[in-house]
Image 1 (cartoon, rainbow, N blue to C red):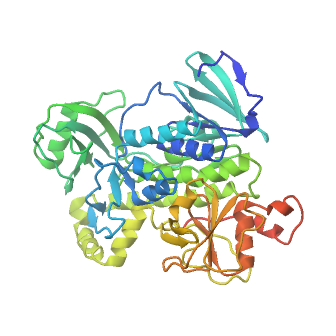
Image 2 (image 1 turned 45 degrees about the vertical axis):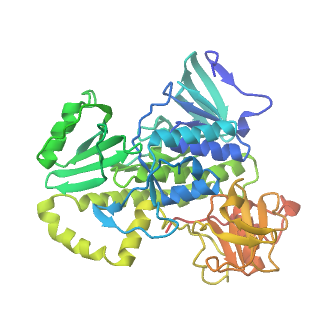
Image 3 (image 1 turned 90 degrees about the vertical axis):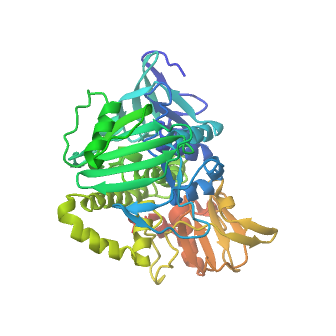
Length: 522
């Protein structure tokens, strides 16, 4: 969409205080846009690149990301007949055993460009406006709005909005303009990656091997038609950013690591990466929020960056929509920082821990020998698997005084389950497609009266994996209540969805509940 130079844009039919602007059309920004549009919020995505790059820094969708996509009815866009599951997951190159059964495809090998393509299609279907070739150059904010300065193809203009979200990567312009600190460490080593065209008739297999000076991963992509070669060298100085990455640099890096140079002719993409680890001080500064790499960067091991960004967007979308539309309980938007920053911090810590298990090999070999014994224990294996995939993420959910010990399911992502309702079998996830709250009643006497404009109600027969009289599920799939106590249920409804409709704006016995906010992530 072209803009007149120096114009200030505001639509009478959709006022600026009802609009959200997102900087960045990567997976995080596109999923967030789709979530906002699902709730009916006008959303504009600004992307500085004139067209999609086709690059694939991220290569996999972890099981937790697949579950949230399933909750929106989107997972089949990614789980296509040619999509393969990664054969293994690792922690510091210690191979972990995946659970058997329905989650056998724990990580799907989906190149980032395909993820972006599918999410952009979803965002556009819902009415998102995506402006390519438009770059954020400045911002200002007050109590009522944020004004975004933009440089577009036809010149500069201003765009007013209720909120601005920076999903514009590790070098985030939005984060810098908002003055949000990004402390951490710079890179101490670097790697080269290249996507190599596989010769006709050749077969390639996934592998990752550790050597004294670094490690090399071979990852089949695009149905085995290409091979990603990814090196890491611990004792080589990184070339300057102005030095182009070449096929020879990739060959020489592989030879230094493994002792032999690979035979390949054509690469379709080359890039360098480092191990800089940084975490934003705040995920929110007034009317500016951060998500994805704009909020956290780390060494790219285990494919955690893209997935953590998707989960940031899923957590933020419904909260921001409720806030913009004036239906959020007080403090709801602040729970985004409270819940997601601890997750980002754990990702930064676990990637640093994995690096500590890789180098220097002559000194850490005894530690690796002990660690190899530890990961044979199922409890250790599962803990590490849940750590790197995010499956173990559990948010702290406030309970009213005297409620007793929290239910084991509380704060966790609800598992999909086949339920039996009055009209027959139904999938739990299918009832989350619209992005609303959901109350599942397994017993009489519990309801969402006063909240049915925001929360759907499903009555079902008891299920062994969902051992509670009722479950209240937030729009992001996390369990906000698992209880047989009507008072606890009403507290949770007020905490996450605001005052009941018949008492909104009046004093009620539940007003104290709206002051409660969630804590961090366990």
